[in-house]
Length: 324
Length: 280
Image (cartoon, rainbow over all chains, first blue to last red):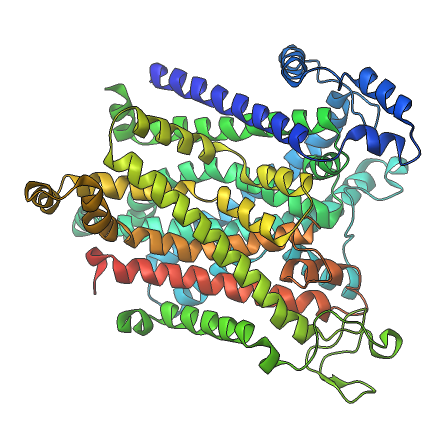
């Protein structure tokens, strides 16, 4: 178990290093330079050279990369070229917004998706099942930014119920207690519903498939034959066994959710990491892009390892296989 | 094929995809307008669906802010979206089959390296990579195809690798080698054709996924560039006029969802039909 975990951690570290190296090479191989964007078209050649030297961009790539890696590992993430603020501050201000959005929608979409998928599998083939399958495949196929726009159209422009932009109103700083919380929650609703609806589609589809397969296994027939109530067979026997692959999916859907959040944050002007990343890439803000990709790579790898550990914990067979 | 069409999901998916493909291929026949030129903006912009403009041209789903017919742009956008989706998946399939077949058939350091690369690429955050690649170079349709193809081959390589490895141990392969066929010929003529079933299913699902990602990149302004219509950049341009002309953003979204649903259902149906274990 621990040997396996160690191997996974090492492999994960290699992936993070690879992502970071690749990002660095891509950033520097691509046309465009932060100095051009900083100085604008009126900058002279001398100003350019001076600015490049000040930012350390004139040194060989390998030495730039080594310096960056060393500092990053020690927790010094550099200064944003475009904003002049420390990168750690830029990201620290953005992470909670993304974590709140992604974490809540992950929780909601899996709870609802597992329930829906299990409920469908228990009556598979029926009309309700078919109707719900059509609904979940449609949700699954919806691009987040489009679903978001449609919700904005209905709930913001037509019904005038919910705000569509940002994570707080302009007067948020002057609100206190309940009013502050209500303002925050109202801003959270539309982005959260968008991400959750799409997540439910994927989770329900997957759980329904896994459940139907489990329900055809001999031990389910045995449980029925023993005379157990079918509710108990479905929840205690089938669902429990069908959930192992779902846990693996959960780990894999962390990156998917993060990427979904990139688009949804763009629609709702949600001040999260996705938006920071898109803006930083366009501004060639090297330190911010590097730090944001590194942190998201760490999260993705951590999600996969966590899913592995959870799967081993849930399923004795996986545990036994890894022990040999 | 008959069994595929007898499956309701397969029939629906095939119907939708065929309709869209034929419509896209015969775009000049389906619509008389031009997707790009803007004429007489003031008189023809933001016309609601089912209206006729001052020149007598009929607009089934209205016009956008430049007075361009949304239906025409939708049909020409289908060319781009379907084309990008299909080409990107082709790139993925070629790469994935190549890597998977080589890694599955020959053992040793080559195989281990290829599998390592595959696992590594599979662990990369795809959208972050897409954003980087698409944002750093000048956006173009060809770049989108390449980027989507290069980030989508890993799961196909994994599938092919598993199939090839299992097939290589089967008696008919040993037989082919015993009668003196060369190894490459055995791989190409005996193993690969039998290993392609899961690839077909993955391709159907992959096309839907690629179309959705293309639209996402174009929506962010990193994909197909206006005035060339793609469903993604049509949604993006409709975003700004959501209040007074909601049809501009709604129509391409509906088309996108329909096509992706069709791909997913077709993939599901193909899996059931092609898998001899669930033959009904």
